[in-house]
Image (cartoon, rainbow, N blue to C red):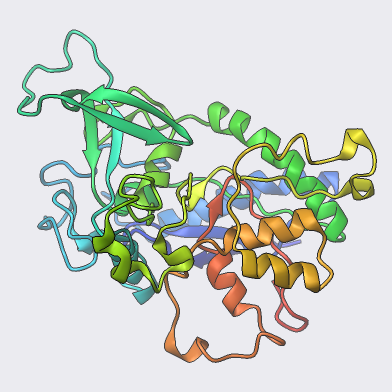
Length: 359
């Protein structure tokens, strides 16, 4: 079988996403094709570069956000990000990406605020301007801790997170039951895989006191309002601005829309046996959209899956093209995918597309 590859636009104007043109099979011999396919994609990329160019495989460009880190030079800021450190020229010119950036900032009510602890040693502060005093709280993955402002790496734009690279793997299952079982099993493994693949020790030209990219990306697309983050619960000035949002922009949301999963979904033996019941495992707060949950339950969807789907709908859609607004949900899943595709979690459960759509 002849290998082939496909290319897709990604968030950064310097990035490219490569995939096998056809999925790998389920046989042992297909494992041998993985490296061959990756070598082919690397070869295709190299063939398009100049002699003095390379395509490094890195999670994050280490000097992103420092002075003169682009070629040609670009001025920080722009209508989409309004960043003090990076230019909108870094964003892929496809309308989706700039719109995502602007709408996350607008829904949040301010620029994203990414804070990562700085690695401190005897050489850390030499040559650094230390004009910030006091402490600030850092919140990531459900945890929070206080850190001196002068011991933080600060970033303020989506490109610092979505400009990072990774490997994504999609598994095709034989039916819905197998897919839900696999979802739960993979969810348990994701923290281990994150640790094994830790490769992000440098951010904005500084050594970080963390070594994975997760918290940076989560903060880079955190579109929650101050009320949803629990920081401005009683401020009435936001009430008019947020009424059009999901939950009125005031429902407490403990996580960014890019985070770990909040519930398991396998319904093995309908939860009748203690060993297969999800009740004792689904023990973290998982806010849901009550109307969506009621609709799903009325349509015959079991409780674990209805909770998972309605949890996605506590978020607002971030991008939709005008020609895709008025389309029938009976024959298209575009409206669902619009929400699903911008709920970035450690594992994503993807129902098959409608007949005839492929995928």
